[in-house]
Amino acid sequence: MRSEDLVLDVATGTGIIAEIFFRKAKAVVGLDFTQEMFKQALLRLNFMVNAQAEKLPFSDNAFDLVTCRQGLQFMDALKAVSQMHRVCKPGARSFWCSWWLWEMRIKNTRLRSRWPGSR
Ligand SMILES: C[S@@+](CC[C@H](N)C(=O)[O-])C[C@H]1O[C@@H](n2cnc3c(N)ncnc32)[C@H](O)[C@@H]1O
Image (cartoon, rainbow, N blue to C red; front, side):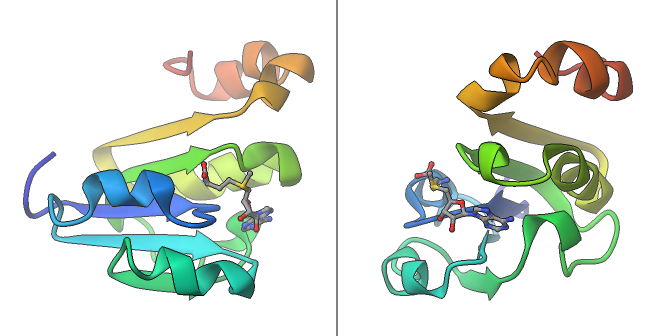
């Protein structure tokens, strides 16, 4: 993590994951489509965006790190991962975890074939 990094936490909820990067990165943006989460999340990040993960309202190559914990099971996972990939700068990192990916066999098939580095 570099102090100039821009971080996006998709499906941030109350911002628990975003908090890890708060004050370490230049800015941490939390995105969630549930507005009720905003109050708690805003204590842990710099910006909060109310939007769908499948249609991220950011330009291409915008972030140095994109995270998403326990959100993909509620989304169109392929669309959301494509969007997260799109907004990553070249060489940026993207971490997402969800118990559901394994169950749906997406991890080993479609996601892995598109993003061979995914584990
Ligand atoms: C189980 S919570 C995880 C919260 C947080 N990432 C964490 O690990 O504590 C799932 C979150 O995903 C959000 N969410 C679900 N579907 C979404 C979508 N399509 N776009 C954006 N946020 C979504 C929900 O509003 C909720 O806050």
